[in-house]
Length: 257
Length: 284
Image 1 (cartoon, each protein chain N blue to C red):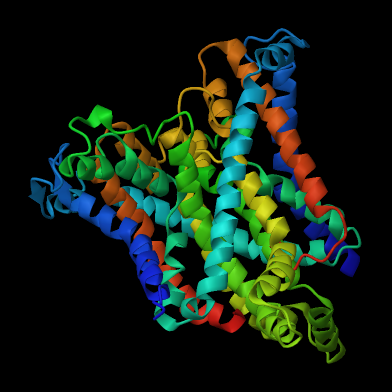
Image 2 (cartoon, one colour; image 1 turned 30 degrees about the vertical axis):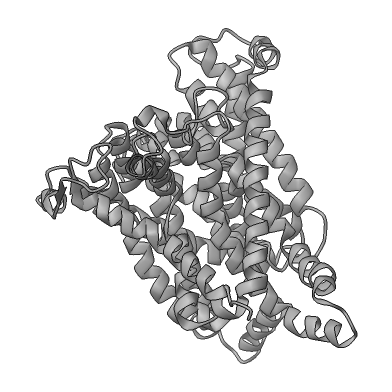
């Protein structure tokens, strides 16, 4: 009799995927968990209560991250969509695309270190505006390249049809291009939001520790060896994307996959 | 009028997409040659000579290259195996959401989580103690901040394998590998031949640009090696930032030399990957 091993392996895969989420929540609820104890001496909501009474500014960091990520996602998706049209209809689009790949594949932290002088000169060093601008600079090439597949002959012929029927540019965007690109725009918004939400290196260089996003907080807690608050920050960092993933997959990916 | 509008778009593209990169590169280049910088007195090759003779860059590059290569090879191999064996199960409702979950975990959390699992006072050290394998934390093997970069490679694998699984599942469906496999089978091909002649060539050929792209991303990874790396050698991004943030002013210029070298390598890779004219349906 041959044993079907697939269900066991699949169950193991599910457990391995869920383990980090469960472990981080568990660690965020723990206190005084010293080696070699397998179980912490305290399990409860003490850390969460402390955070929600804003003693460590984690909630402030959460909303700061949210604001920065929303701004970066809105600006980069909008500009990426509009500017990509000019780039991908241009006769030299191969060279222009290549130019967009340079900032896209360079490590953001190195990019930020080399750009920091200019941010300092422009008064964008150590403030939220500077972090938004810096993150926009790395999210924009992503958004631009993301829309490369959208601008094709079919879309162009739709635009020509609208023009032939007497529609103006505004109507072309509102009635044709935006409805056609709605799904892609949503995915791009989600992806650029995540690029910003997960960003650490660039934010630490341009924000110089003054702009304390959640990733900065996680690293601060790791440095302080405060692993319980570190885990709590991790929970705040990963659960919003999980919710977004749920909606994104449910309503957007279905149309494409 | 149309041309004018397109030109405004191109102008904005240059302003946002090209100018910052060019400015950053020129700044780093000028700094590396001593032309600008707080303690620099004009053009010199001193910092370049120092970096090249000390071998720091080459050591760091080789170290980063090997880590990225091992992580990508293991991840792609695992993802191909999972796709070939569990494709049907992964398309079911519950699993199709579960496999997306790892995408919600950023590098810094992966680094932190790996540290919590594999450090000398971590989860596995506690289990080992409970099971009687070790009596003190120091007896637990070095799995983080170690010379072999086990912690870093583990983190990279857990970060990118789920992405490759999703990618391969997508390519499998879009390229109709199922139908092609059935066709090969009806022509007399066995399971191994189908894997070697149909499944692997199609999936690898359609995604190799993205695989290379992920290799480049790992080469410049920062958060994970910052948490799980060792003092020396370091991965490239960590080395660059450490040098640039030094109080020793000569080291700052040397940091910019490494930054210039890294940028040049990445740029050449981008040119080789994206300039040749070919069909790349999964490159973006």
